Length: 110
Image (cartoon, rainbow, N blue to C red; front, side, top):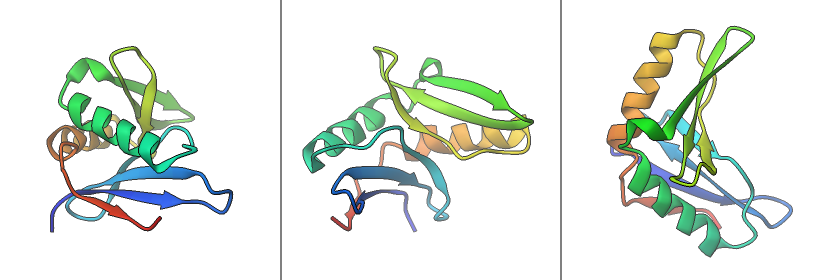
């Protein structure tokens, strides 16, 4: 299996995306809803172009849970990871996002 972006439309008619790793794990989800499919696809392209850069990852911790936010060059948050119980699992997830976030595959349900 290969990694992919999943693009969905919610009940309010807004779009969201997630990056799925080659094992099916959700590596990150979009940080905001999009009013159009084109806007969501544009930010998927921004994720692809920025996921390999270490300085785009902001590491956070809350209540003993670790997560990251992937940022665009202008510091807009593109996506947020799930929460991990340890810093090492967080670093593993960042490594996966870096290596698999450039995927061209998009599976759209909308």
